[in-house]
Amino acid sequence: MYWSVLIASLPALSFLLITTVGDGILFKLWLQDFYPNLLQLNQTDKEINFIKVMNEVDGISFGKTEAWVVPAADAWRRWSTASSNIIFFGCLTISAICGYFAVKKVSPAFKARSHVEKILLWVLGLSSLVAILTTIGIVLSVLFETVRFFDLIPPDEFLFGLTWNPQFEGAIRAGSEGAKPEYGMIPMFVGTLLISLVAVSVAVPVGLLSAIYLAEYATKRVRAIVKPLLEILAGVPTVVYGFFAALTIAPMVKGFGESLGLTVSSESALAAGLVMGVMIIPFVSSLSDDVINSVPQSLRDAAYGLGSTVSETTRLVVIPAALPGIVAAIILAVSRAIGETMIVVMAAGLAANLTFNPLDAVTTVTTQIVTILVGDQEFESAKTLSAFALALMLIIVTLILNFFALQIVKRYREQYD
Image 1: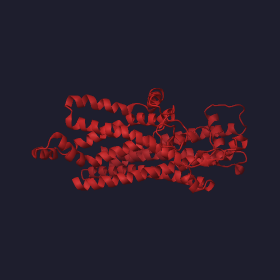
Image 2: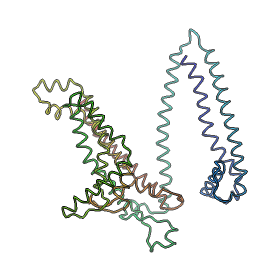
Image 3: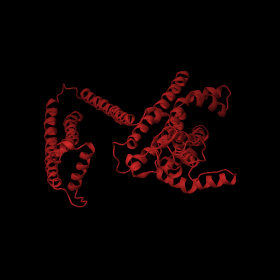
Image 4: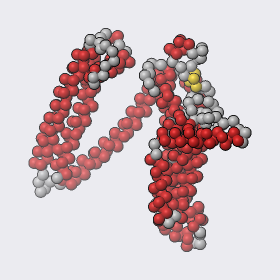
């Protein structure tokens, strides 16, 4: 039965996927025949014309419609209707034909199980390939745009510059007080590092100690109550954390700092880092708890047999044996902190200040990427392309971080396996 179902469904699903993705690309190419002055249009103008046609197809009107848009939209509707019919009847036909041949092939001598396993193995392999190709596609798309950015801005200015003040050329001509665009990335990476360090300083001790308590000391009843409550923190939307940070934690930090005679910004790295640390506690506690519980009980029993206490067994046996998994949990938490945006926007601000003082306002790489790409942007300007350069640097930093984490994991895994 599984053999027949797979043979009948997989070719039809493949046809559906290819035609669903391909017809849109094909229609978009055909649509260019309706564009006026096609040879004089750049890629941005073509995208604008495409949006005009899609608005007409969806019944969205902004003022008077250009004459060529209406026939283009009618053609798109005809193509879409024809494509839907072809896809529907094509899937039915392919499924019926393949199902018929699959049933005809079944016989007492036919080894259906081995064939099904081969098909599933291919499906699993293709699924892995999709993930790999997606990652490669993301890196290449960011890399190509970064190369375009470095054609406009010298790489040394971007990599070692200490000031971040991007401007559109149009904004400069319109009068931005003569400000020269500057694209130094160091202030954003310092801000990212500062907030991440504050967050990790909160999340790692609290999360790790919570995991040790739940795994080694807590009763089953306490564990059943406390662990789900900790994991609820992972399900709270980040905008809620940002709202809490901006309205509660930031004023508290400012008031406490001023009571000690310190100068504290209303938006500070400390406020954002504290709330971000609370947000990533479940990543450390839950994963570390699972890793600690996976340590064989025989190691604990051997330590107890030598006269070790629970504390000594935990410190000297369980934690070293679970260290690779704990490091992986911490790296995941750090990656989550580096990629956070909403809390930073609401609690730390958008000012790209080069400072190591957690009481000052800072910004992060991800926040600046979002800020740059929000709204209608022209992808020919250095300001817009700088978002891709920042993204590439962030990918490289994360890759280096993961590399060192893997070295730590390999070292201790060899020691305790």
